[in-house]
Image 1 (cartoon, one colour):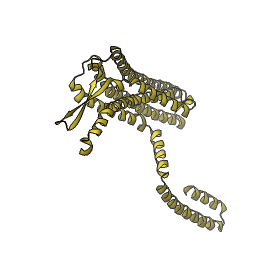
Image 2 (spheres, one colour; image 1 turned 180 degrees about the vertical axis):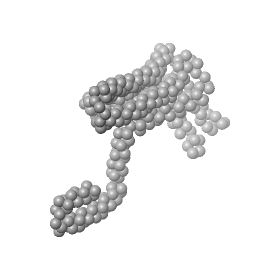
Image 3 (cartoon, helix red, strand yellow; image 1 turned 45 degrees about the vertical axis):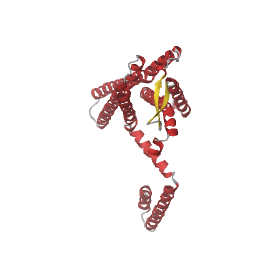
Image 4 (cartoon, helix red, strand yellow; image 1 turned 135 degrees about the vertical axis):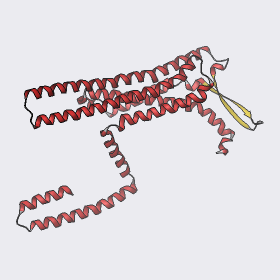
Length: 317
């Protein structure tokens, strides 16, 4: 809106908040990387020791992990709040205010100790928010593939042993079909895991290039104008794709997601009243139909048949 765009007070607010927005963008990006890493740890632990999983990830530990990830991300990206300042000037014959971000490295009065601190801080962010999660996620997901391959090899040996010790009968055929189903499932998991690793590496590693160039003072105007926005968009696409690959590829997650959505929809008062109205009509009809059918069979001579029919009707209703 031109009113806000040309209003100098709003322009000052926009320029001053811009640094905070850059800081929050990097914080949330770092948090998503660590959340994907935490999910990879949980999946790897669940595949290796499935019976102990329910005793490990309780609600308190999950909340503590989320708070710890948020604190680490805020700390690693803290240098964004002090690296840039905004300079203001009047343009268009003194009628419009204009602001420009200025790196404190270009200000002569800036302490050299502060510049070194920012340089080391930025290096730590690159290492611990891009490269460390990438390496750990790759290792953990490769472990999942190795565990699945190992279990598949053991099952194949067991099936060969059973086939050599016994003749072909329905139980053996059933175990063979179970083995084939498991192979298909493991193959699907393998492709999903490889897609997660590849998607994460391809979409996250390029985002480190602008920061690396800034460390070596090679950051050009082209990087700020074109590469960095494209890199941010590419990284965002990668995070969304990883969510889809991680979660929506799971049948259990999709079923649970639908249950949660239905529960949230039913919590809306207007929809809940409508559902109760229609469910009451359905229940009344089903009770009347059951009463008529049971009365019909009660007057008959075959009590066993009536008992079976009433059970069937109850189950169907």
